[in-house]
Image 1 (cartoon, helix red, strand yellow):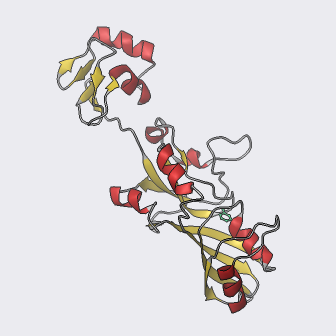
Image 2: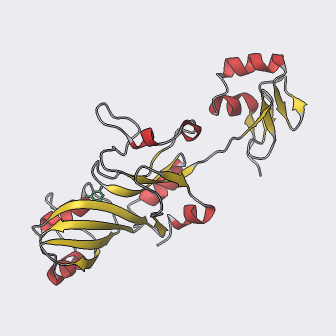
Image 3: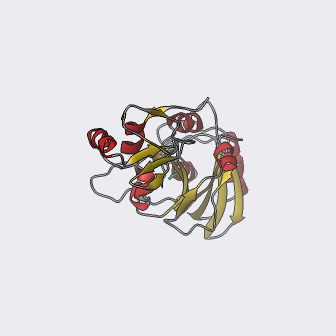
Length: 240
Ligand code: URA
């Protein structure tokens, strides 16, 4: 069944004014729903299907927004930070009105796939340690990454705080003085990829997230660019 909301709630959410202002606007006859002028600010509407007009223009409301950002270096994955730019600084006001937040965290210097949404339930499911949603990273490593590392990661390594990681799949792309790898992990401990490499005596010098569940970073997005997820992609985030 379609979700119903008060017209004043809908219009204030999308930035047409405060609830008190919307109440006043109802007296001016500048709001209509499906062609009928609204005088009651408490009118129940189906905001995703009714045609709502404000000051002669059709306005659009949705419950949830889902964005894929190609996160650049230098941005904090949070909704507020005292000192540094945050990923929401990259998002336009038309989406910020829905009060979105990042799904999980990437380090300030990590790039790549970051989903931004206001769907708390979906975010909770994707991040739940019980769900083991896989995340794949591309990294450059200062040092020679070897078959031994593949075996160690598959078995699980011990991090600096004593935590034993779950089996993770390491794929060596380039093995050399600086190596290039892809690593798939099934959990999300703080600085996990960097700490896994530290546990085998190596340092991550560049890190980028490529995928989350079956959702892949759209490589056509330049760093700092974002786009809406498709219906299919929203589902892919939870798939293993
Ligand atoms: N692992 C890290 O070390 N950093 C990230 O940003 C993500 C995973």
